[in-house]
Every structure is written in C-alpha cells, then in structure tokens.
Image 1 (cartoon, chains in turn yellow, brown):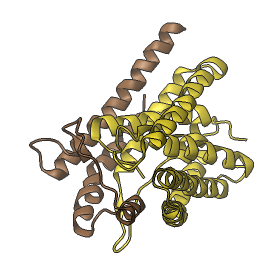
Image 2 (cartoon, one colour):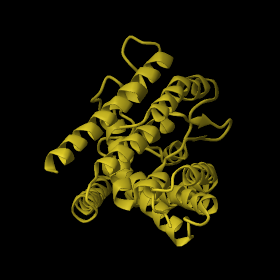
Image 3 (cartoon, helix red, strand yellow):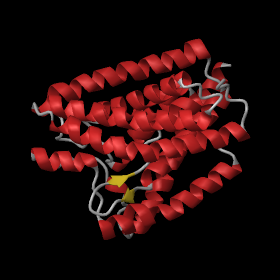
Image 4 (cartoon, chains in turn red, yellow):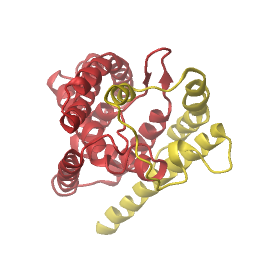
Length: 204
Length: 93
C-alpha cells in the first residue's frame, strides 16, 4: 500500500502531507506532555517498530492476484496506545521511504496518513470499543481487519481525488476487505498471545 | 531496547525474509492492489532516485543477501532512533 512518487496529484500530496504532519505533531505533544514519555514506553515502541519493519518485508505473493504483508497499524495502536502508535508507524514508514525508497518521498504524507494514522487510530478505537481487554482475540481480529480495509479505502480516496475516478476506491476497498482478514488474524493472535504473557499493558 | 528473545525473533524473521521478498516474489510475481489501480489508470512511477538501497537491495550484493543486509540496516536505524530518544528522555529526567 506504499504509494510511490507520481501516483498522487500535487494538491492531494500536499494536503495529505499537512494532515499527517498535524497528526504526528499532535501525537508527539500528547505523548510527551500528557502521557509522559517513559523509558519503558520508548523501549516498547522501538522494539515494536523494528518488528513491524521486518514483518512488512515478509510479503506473501498470491498466484494470479496480489500480494499481502502485515501493515501493523492496529497492532501498534493497541499495544502502544493511539499516539505512540502513530509515532511508531511514522518512524517505520519514514525509514522505509528515505532509506529504501519503499513509498515515494512526495507520497510520504499520504502513506503516513493511511498506514500510520488511519490504521492506528481505527485499530485502537475498535479494539477499545469491542472490549478488547476481555476478548482480545475477537476484538483484535476485527480491529486488524477494519484498520487495513479503511487504510486501503483512504489510499483509494487519495487516488480517486487525484485523478477524478471512483475506481481506486472500489479496487482498494475490495482487495483490502479480503487482505484485511489476514491482518485481522495476525493482529488478534498476537494481541491474545501478549495478553496471556503480559498483564502490564492496561487494556482493560 | 528489545530483549534477547525479541532480537532472536527479529533475526530469524530477517534471515527468512528473502524467501518471501525475493525468491517467491520473483517466482510468482509481486503485485499489490495499488499496482492494479495504477494499471487501470495508466499511472507510472516517477524516476526520482535518492537512495542506493532502493527496494531493499544493496549495491554489489545478490538480491537475497541485499534483502537481509537492508533489513538489518533498517532495524539498526530504528533501534538507534529509539536509543537517541531514550537518551533525550533520560537527560530530561
């Protein structure tokens, strides 16, 4: 879902960059001022960011169709909380873009907005709404699935607005409704596993 | 910083990642939904280059090894960023 250079119109690229920058600045201020950035929080964010970075490199090609890999936005939001989750995904996406050209530099704002803001905030909110502290597997599954679906739709909207066609929203929405199920299974399984192993994360 | 178990898991994932990102991608083809949209709309990626490590390759290394080295470099950069942030926070306290 990493949008390369040349796929977005200038107004959409600039608009999504401003929007994602606003979310990242808000996240940084929330984390440092309101929550208090602890050494433990930074360690967890760093480890999870590294894990998501590597997990995204493991892409499964699907014969005759498409490919899928974990995005990890919901996972970051659920484990780290919404704002630290946004910062974690922004860090991963920025390293991918600047160092490995995975996603365009003019589309970095859109990519952070889709995978680092939409996926994280939707994943976190749904997990909380569905009572993830009591049923982490089901809540994580639904949160992971819808986070990827809506991140895909968000990407589709940016392309649709750029080129005046509704096709991107349909294609991205339909494919990510399918691929999101894998994101959901991984998210739900990891969260359920961590819930058993770790009781300090305060999900209740 | 990540514990020993987490680092071991990352290492295993890194070492196996070329099976998916290089071997299977070359055998079956890597195609994302975004590529389908680009084909339908006739979009093409611009040629702007800013890094020699594009798509997790490493100059002079075969693709599978470059994928592992790039992955390790990415992890290192993320860990260094986290370490720097940690120093800033500890300094503040």
